[in-house]
Figure 1 (cartoon, rainbow over the protein chains, first blue to last red):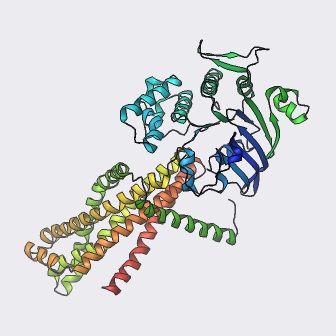
Figure 2: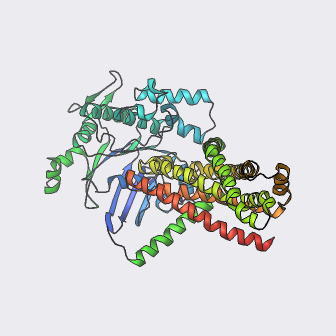
Figure 3: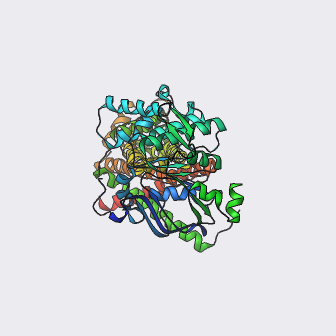
Length: 277
Length: 257
């Protein structure tokens, strides 16, 4: 990785894509995160849950160094982003893909230019190769026919899918999804979740996903993508299939649960039972 | 409306000045760091330069014309109507050309930059750009600074010229001055110092317009209302700063030359 030499590398985090240690932050005297600690293993998908304003999106932005914590340490892909300068972070960010809540596509660029953006910025690739990778990436989200359209000409669901294509084009080591199904109808939401599951099971990319929709979270934990039938299927009991998907629940700036879907369902905590009810 | 304490206001102001200074310095420092977004700078030059052409041409022409008209009465009292050309060219080149062009471009482009970047900020496109490994100050700010500085330089020259033509039209058609006398007076009395002052100012004004427009755009928050507020603030701040910088530069150049 071409991160500048000043950046501190933490070899003890080799098997962990993301580590948060005692991270706290407040915005204008309002504490948002208070002593948050967790780790995302390589190949694991962790779903961040919590009510609005719990700090879920802030965690994603902190992972990339877009927001700095007031206290604590954040290590992404072995680099302590919480202490790196903005200029040092650009190389590291190229190893991480992020899908923003409202897609955040560049509205002055076409779908093709949006998806190709990262390749054109960082590499001196031939135009033919860039185009091929853009088409491949858009084919993954089943939107290869939208190359020449502008984001304003797409529906909300299509914009999210283009945002996913943009995030995965450089095959990042970590993916961050910020409420990828927010504001979408149930059918489109399921389609987006299916794409995320497909990405998870095809490429085994480590991922953090924020969502308000519990059903999305449980679908992800209980389904896998079958490449033969090209569709998402439920995991049958006793199949022994592990999709490496865990849950992290935030409450008032603190982590109150970090574990698997069955553990969440079995929890005796009153707040958790009310949350998942 | 929430009232804030004077100490809080002072702290916010100092922080804003610090952030603006940092952005303004980075926009220049980026000139020496790769990548250089040359196509973006050319695109901005087209938007800022070619797009501002009509407004600058009209402003320059009418300012020169009205200058000739307004001063003719006073000059006539002293029997110096023949100096109209000198007065118009001197005023346009040293002061009115650069300042009025700067104010026009500030009104048109500082607002444009603030609203464009502000919209990008509130829709998380700036964060997306950072997340994709691009430095927004390199990609968005520096090309706008280069384009505004270069184009304002040439627009000011054009405005000066159109102003002198405007003065000529009034002098010749309304005041009945001899054409050769007007042009001789307008051209011959201009010194190197006048030209120097007229060319230094647009460079500084261009820098002020672009950095202020980009700063307010990148600091926008609070949705569409925030973008509107940033746009207004950018025009006001850029206009006031142009007039303030004009005073200091004029004084400085008068002392050193």
